[in-house]
Image (cartoon, rainbow, N blue to C red):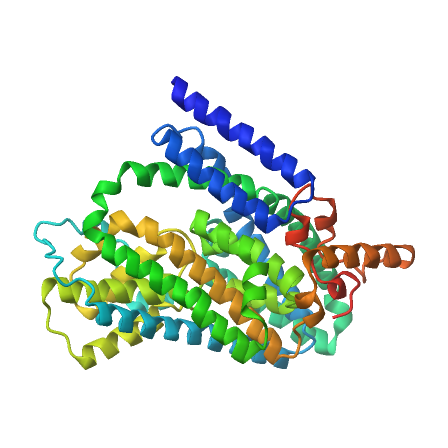
Length: 490
């Protein structure tokens, strides 16, 4: 460890201490995460290539998030479906979730295609594809039939260990629906299982809370590492700068403008207030570049700040890490396709572009919400459309940069879909959505105090949802459940 590496690590740890001091003063979680983001940019710019020992601090957080994803998805779906009361509700919530997730992605596809054609993306790029080695893409280039077969598990333990979300969701739904069918006729037989699910949920939520509390520190470390790399390689990014700028513009237009319109028209909520409430999840997605990794924070914010009930937040948000994914499955593959067509002078007609739209929609079914997913989806789309895969390799230098905007878009769209579904189900808690964070915290404390003397201890009534947030040293205001959930009134 040279002196610069040691200094970078020491400065980072000192900034961690400063964040902890701010957190102890109950600074708003969103503000605290923003502070971590800008401090990370400063560390990355100042120390450039000397953040070797800072990077692991952020990667540990990502690993912890990914570790908790599979248990969280399983317990969320099991708890959500078994508490719905009927399989009919599952059909409506499930159908609406898929519809809105795919609808948001379809709009993203048309937005990307229209923007790329309007600005003539790729014209004059003069791509040199000859001699580009595409063998690294062979393992991710799969026909849709193979992708479809992969949706269905052969070894659920392996799927859990590898965070294969769709097989996990399917098995969880199968078990939960079976439990619900039995409960309709013989509820006493599955009562122990349902009680165990609720107990497991409380344990997982507590673990999630401890991990989420580390978010501002992780954002600082991850941003420092990424900024250092970018500042060192800026000269190599200029040939692809137009593509990168267009990707950011389209992603953020969809994130805030398109989603904002959907929120106002379909959910009747204020887009500005909504984006403020889910800001910590957006910043985490921006820095970790993992929709699945951000899932614990996304579901918590949906319950605590937006007012989406646990059953819907725990079902739609996990589904949104595999279906829809407008940034990775809609925008990026379409932009690369148009970039290739214009740069290489490939003749393309209306029918060809229509095929691209269909392909973008299809690959969004089963997209994995982890870093690098956009490369897989882009490879699949370009291969299916008969476009050269060399373009994927040539654009890899900016893909990691674009992934920040893509992941932010993915996470936001999933949260928006969950909110719309909650509104359509007439389950959105407007009181929670309208309450300032401080008011939510105070009302939760009052609800706990009022409920404590009469809280039963039997297995039929588990501890209040997300009780852990009250004991966390930081971030409590960001991830608290609604007062209605805390006192058990759904």
